[in-house]
Length: 269
Image 1 (cartoon, rainbow, N blue to C red):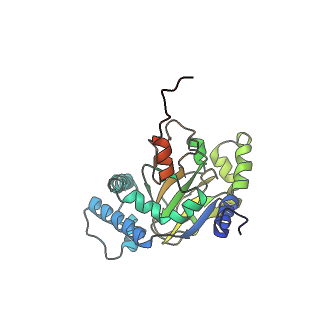
Image 2 (cartoon, rainbow, N blue to C red):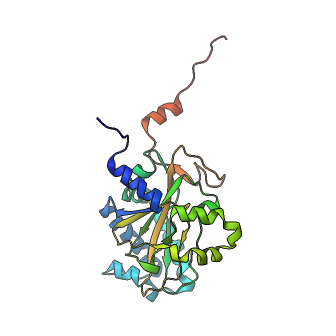
Image 3 (spheres, rainbow, N blue to C red):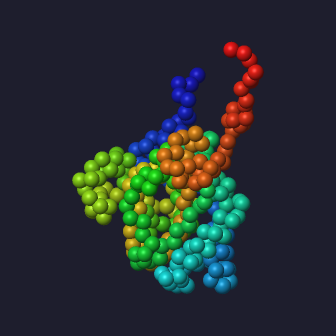
């Protein structure tokens, strides 16, 4: 006989997300991750008009030897367009964190309509994502972000996050603190820098304050990100709503039955 509707592992991972704001775990589909990385390297080589490298990981880590800061955005856009034209990208990307997404969000999900690539060269201050909460830009708070490094990341080659408890306290007093650079100065000592080896995926609460700073390592950082939410959770922005920004991906049979059900008519009151 059971006393809980959730398994012990579901309780544990849910508690970690609620307390820490993030979960890092091995991907569920390593061959799928390898294919995504191979595809991105192929798109980059096509854009740069060079041959496929013998060592894809070294190629990604040292892309700054081939691309300048001025040419970086054109490379990113070429990869963004090429990868999102592939019908297998979003299902494969979802499969990387499928088990944790089901545990943390639910088994009827909506997924952002595009997967976003990010490339940060060493010492490049033009590709920064300053400290922020996604809710500030109209995202629904009923969502998580799946963030995938295509190379191993740590320290300032990675991203930082502030715990839910401390983020809540800062946001509550945001008016008194001032602008976001001032917020960063206030919370700098409390930020958690995430170490994520290749083959692992991060799922985090994007209502927590997070971002990155100048990559002071000798290697470039490559990552992908995409948002997931429950199919029937509230959408707080007209721009970022179901059917445009979010698309259903795991609609279950009972939901389809309910959607197509038609009330009987023709009765007299």
